[in-house]
Length: 599
Image (cartoon, helix red, strand yellow):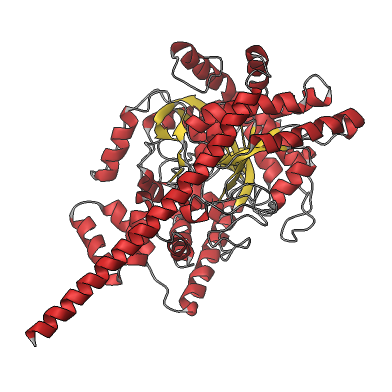
């Protein structure tokens, strides 16, 4: 009998060992496929650089790269520049600086150059006033937007061979409006983090400090915009994914209302073109180096999606935009004291300074009680965690392991419920209350459809309470931080899930919102009532955050996009001089900042 037991145990050990060996072998093969994909891309990039490196002079390149998308379009329409020359200048920048900083994903610059040459032919045969708004303007494309001929990978090794045969609807429309796709851009694995890192394309490095992240999930776009390797990045935002990277990289970003620009035919985590969860939907929007380019994008794109019946047909309302960009009196709500994580003093000072300037202009500034509406955020996350989104991600990883920044949020999907409860208890006993609360919220499981239905009903009711309060008080907009701190280190992406509440609640309320850069961080101190690991992580990060970009966000009610943009312009006009002063002083004091192309 003993020998039988030993035999069974031996067999089980052998079986487990064989499984591990097979899994490791499959992962090694997957890793090699990923390396070959990147190697093939790099070979094409090297050939492009060799062929075109002397085609645009250094002087002309500096002039072109410093132009906004609005200026580029005007110069191409006026035949002062060719789309070909513009494309080559930006492509070379993306192929060198952008590639070195791991901002780009798949790319075929030679193929995309053909579209720039086609734009020049259109300019030659078309009256200036009849030319489309984006004519000849290069645009980088976030990885999960489909672009015919290139890969949409979601940052997963298992998708490294997936080459798209059609465009996402937003890409299709941008092409029709004259834009020239430049390349695909880097993202977090599966797009659910504020750190754009994955095992296929690498980790996007912040050009202001290469130890820091560009943010996510549109981190590659924000990085390319910040180093002048693209004038516009086409991004998406479901919890801050445009505004956070724009903030971390010191550029502009706008998250429209969900119903203004189509996300149709984007690649989902299950590799399909259709969202399986619509309680919280992603918005499609731009990241730019110039505020004017947010307006160029919105004017061109609003009302251009007749084949997506979920999208509003209304065009850009310039009258509303002009009214609010020049208005004499607004009622502005602000909040920067949600107790979950204190906002860094250096960011607080800049936001308060902006509010003081608005008050001096005659606007009414009132504190908004955002804290009392944070249940919207918590229940929204519960719905996401119960939607199957994370399980779907885990299944599609294949033999690849999730990135470390997902450890806390995937635990409830990998271990029995009692294990999660033990982990939560352990965290509480060791003083890690905030992480414990976050994990506890992620672990809430709806065992029946009725429970899920009830949670959705409660979520929608709470949103209604918010809207009624906002309207009853007569607010025109909210001004909020985007995150409590500037860009954090690559490898610290776990900070995402406890600190995305200022940006994510805006998504849950479907409020259009935009990121406005305020300047650079001058105060690296941090104050907190908490004494936990998160506080120490934030304090350590801030010690190396001097002169990192900081921003605020402006948000309005759903579908008030033109009003939001108008107020953003008003705010930007107040802060842009100080921002440019900070940037120029920093450019002149360091040779290490890759944001300044003249260095």
